[in-house]
Image (cartoon, rainbow, N blue to C red; front, side):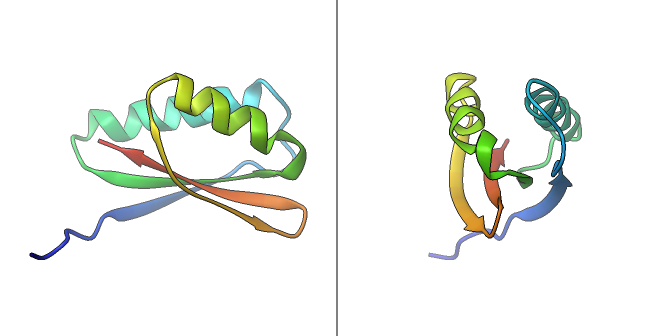
Length: 81
């Protein structure tokens, strides 16, 4: 069985504060959904917001495929269908 490789789109939100970083993630998800393509949205956010953002994204029903810390920020992969 072959696994379909998903495209990845990066949204760099370092320096953005809550709730604007979360709002921009949701708007980008909606934009991707309007294109009817399955894709991974990689949001780059400051470390201090990671827990809240991940929880909120899950509460909206989206799947987090990874959350990787890189220094003072995180890369969060969100599956968008």
